[in-house]
Image 1: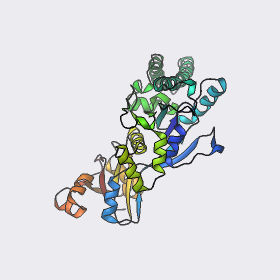
Image 2: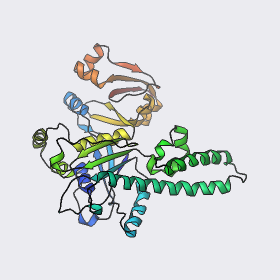
Image 3: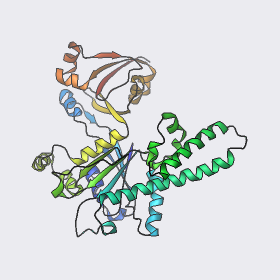
Image 4: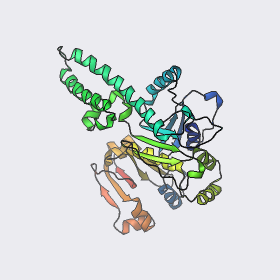
Length: 354
C-alpha cells in the first residue's frame, strides 16, 4: 500500500512527509524520492491492549513516498517530473500538496499563493501523461486490430474502452470516470493510469488559519485535508503528554497527520479486522468485500487451507460488554462461514484444521 506525495516546489510537501513519517530532512536527498512506512492510527487497538497487555501491538501500515516538487516553469523541471511520474504510477493513492500559507522567507512557486491554480496545474499534467499513454496505445491497436490474432477479441474490447478513456481525458475528466467496472479495471490494470487513482488534496495553510479552515473537496477527488505542515512537524516532536495539551490548546482532538493517513487508507478501499490475545493485538488490512476465508489467509495460509469457521465479534460489541467472555454471554459472538464478508473492526478468531 503506497501513497505518493506530489505537488509544486515550496508547497511544504517534504515538511508534511517529515511530520507524517518522522523522517528528518536530509540535504543529501534533495531531488530524490524518499520512502518511509507509517502506522495507520486505530484507537481500537488501545482498548484491546489494555484488555490483554500483549507482548506486541501491531498497526496496519502504509508506505509514504515523497517525490521532488514538480516545477513546470522550465524544460529541466518538466523532464524531471516526467521521469518521476513513472514511479508515481506505482502508488495506490495520490496526495497532492498545494500551498496556502504565506511566508516571505520561502519563495512561492510562480510567485503566487493560489491553491486552486496549483492543483489544476498538477491535475492537468496527470491527465496529459495519461492521454499520451492512451493515444499511443490506441494508435498501435488501430493498426493491428484488422490482422488475425489470438487476442483479437480482447484487443477490440480494449480499443473501445481506450477510446472512451481518450474522450474523457479530452473533456478534462479523470479516467476514474471512464473506467468504472471491475472488468474494465482488470483489462487496463497494466497501464496504472494516474488519473484513475484516488486523489487526496492537502491544503498546507498557515498556523493562524488552523482553527477555522474548512478544506473543500474538489470534484473527482476522494477527500481534502487542511493542515499546517510546520505545526504538524512540531506536534510530532513533542512528548505524548505535551502533544495532547498542544492539541487542546489548538481546539482539536486529532492531528491532521492522523486524518491524512486514515484518509489514504480509506481511499485505497482498505478496512481492518482485528485479532487479540496475550501475544499480540493486531490490525490486519484487507480490501472492503473480503470474505472470511481470505481474511484468514492474511494471517497464515494454513488458516485459509483448513478453515472451519470464524468466531466473530464486532469491536463495539466487545467494548460495550467489557471483554470477550461477557460479549459471548450477551450473544454478541457469531460463528461465520467462509463466505462471510468481513466488516471493519470485526475481531476474528479463526477455527481451522490442517
